[in-house]
Length: 228
Image 1 (cartoon, rainbow, N blue to C red):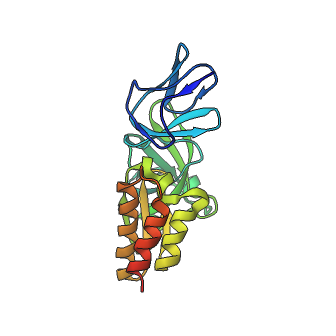
Image 2: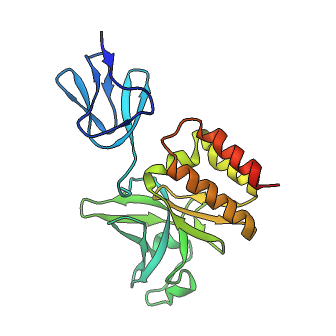
Image 3: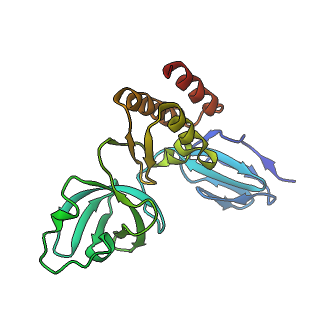
């Protein structure tokens, strides 16, 4: 019989033994060493049936195909726009993927996106040379107007969104803010100034307490006290 050495949502450190025996399966952030499952890095344990995985608590964003992210236009090239996406990878939005309109070579691309604009994009391709191709073609992909953009640790994004979007929906409902959460840790929110402050405070609480159980109720209590 196997033996689990940790509880669900425990904080574990690299090299820590999470389970003994062959009854359990190593998931993300873990590996098997003989009959033991070992943590690869610092993280929050997640036990789902026979699978043991880690939810990272630190580390930079690593882009994956299909991720919906928020980026900032950093430069304008001959063939499109260079987008900063909160990681070490260089991201390119080509003219073809930036708009459905035909753009003549040499056209003024600032009429579409200027340096400093924030856009919601989707990762199309990630190369071994750390180059990322993104697109603006798809539901919800757009240039962001107004509001504010700030960054959190990308590993905390699932906690901010919550199960089936429950956490972020609670913040939207309480504050009336429009909120878009990028998988890369950039978050855009727009609403009444006072409500924006409350929404951001709630997100800050989630980021700082992502390892704490009962966080959903804590956030609902905070929002109930702040929004009258």
